[in-house]
Image (cartoon, rainbow, N blue to C red; front, side):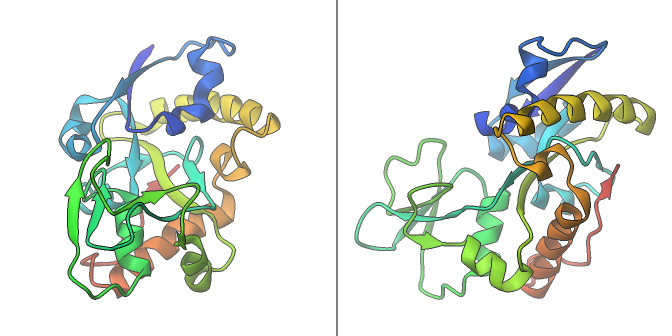
Length: 220
């Protein structure tokens, strides 16, 4: 069985590298398809699977997610390029990173938001390293020691039975990557804390008025 897997960032693929390199060889073959994050919302119905940013559940209520293979971090913040805060570069207005910025900060001054894949001409960008203003500290103030879930593997097309088969092989790949310290335990399996992290994200989103109602994604 060959399945098309959409992704935005190379970082997302690290958790399934043993599958992509055929180190793990099962009856399921994943074909990675790189998609611009701004276009992912419109491509989901064409893809068998995708790494899906949490905010896209605002547009599709029937996404089935799996609890394995998530892109998870504990570090995220704002990297200041120039000595001013006038232009913020983001990859998409529907990215989890941009929602975290809006959810966690009380930034009131007018700021121009620029969408770009490269973010070469900007004052501030959202980064996982070498940042100057921590967003993860603000996350911990609101959600405690929960990890930050950026994207989950999910599908609009596959039924629960097929997803259960995919779940097994992705967990196997993720277990190898965790043992090699390439990914965190929450990428291997969300577990209780990972699920609580998703819940906390949507609670904050609702509190800020960015989500219209309480969202509880279906995670297998």
